[in-house]
Amino acid sequence: MKKTLLSLLMLAGIGYAASAQTSKPVTFGVKAGVAFPSMSISAGGTSIGFDSKISFYVGGTAEFALSDIISIQPGLSFIGKGSKLGGDTFDFEESDLTNESATLNLNYLELPVNVLANFKVNNAGKVFIGAGPYFAYALSGNVKYGSEKEKIEFDSNDGIKRGEFGLNFLAGFQFNNKLNIHAGYGLGLSSVIDEPSEVDVKFKNKVFSVGFGYSF
Image (cartoon, rainbow, N blue to C red; front, side, top):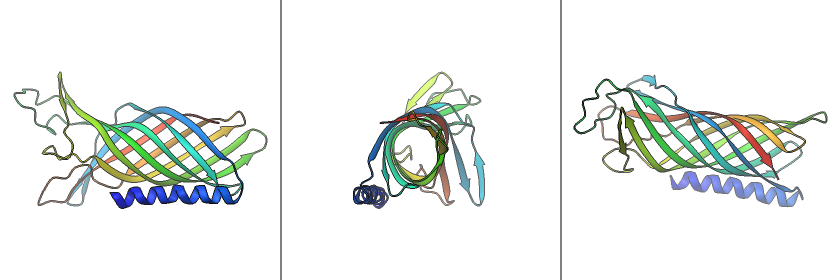
């Protein structure tokens, strides 16, 4: 986990150094939008996907130009993840709601570092596409099960870890007025649960998002 965070910070530092050497300005921005997180569980070569839920994200970015086309964009966002789950996924004390569906809500502070390719489109603006790693740290979480709600205690007997990492993909269009529209997909590579088991079980986050941004 520490190595992942260190790698992200090193990438951001490289971008800053390259930007300074080429005398390119650093562009700061804000972004917000709707997220559609879901989760998948895999064990013994079998993978099952759970239904997505509706959430949101909000955050900021800093973009360091390496050339007229390539740039590095670290960011920091608050994002809601989780999924809709089957009613028997979690056990609630003194509950008869065995047939109800459950919703797992996880709130993360996420640090992505993306490498972007930027292509100018006449005088309208530019198209950008990119990808890179991310590290996320869970701030809070709960499970809603019918009319009941249970808080998640991370790194405890609940088996939910605070840290997770994965790959981030994004694409969008930035207008000349510095407003942009974008879409992204976050693919979790690490499991969010850490329970001893004879079977290797992986429980991973997946997030599709769409939103708006503005650069200063």
